[in-house]
Image 1 (cartoon, rainbow, N blue to C red):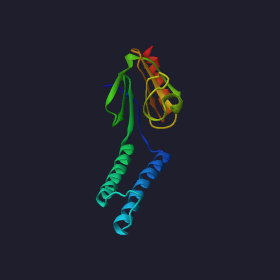
Image 2: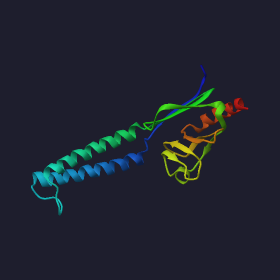
Image 3: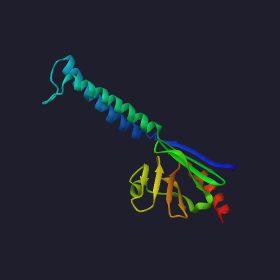
Length: 177
């Protein structure tokens, strides 16, 4: 069994993301709630072409269901990275559910580096490079582990522990030579 060198688990917990999500979903729920209240309780039509009361109620329930699903979905997204002496393992739940394993012998080059998430990949999450730099899995900020494989595949795994990961990568590079 190989010795564990590095382990990291990351999730979307940025305040700005959750504020935006709350404003969008909360605003939709409030709008449907007002429409439902005005049309069913106050007995005033809501809008120029109002929905039927039952369609409005179904829409309200669907909006609540979608808001709950969307919140759960963003809350459950998790990037996990594990590095031991022989392999690099990663998964990005729910998109990649099982660990993908990269044997160290198949790595051409490996570096911890600063990158530009929006300019290079169009943002955060499960991304493909807009400049031909492969796949990027990231959650926040702008530091990551860039792995180039001997078969030409390139992967960037975002990290919040850049200093710790740099130490691990330097020791791996010594063993790769």
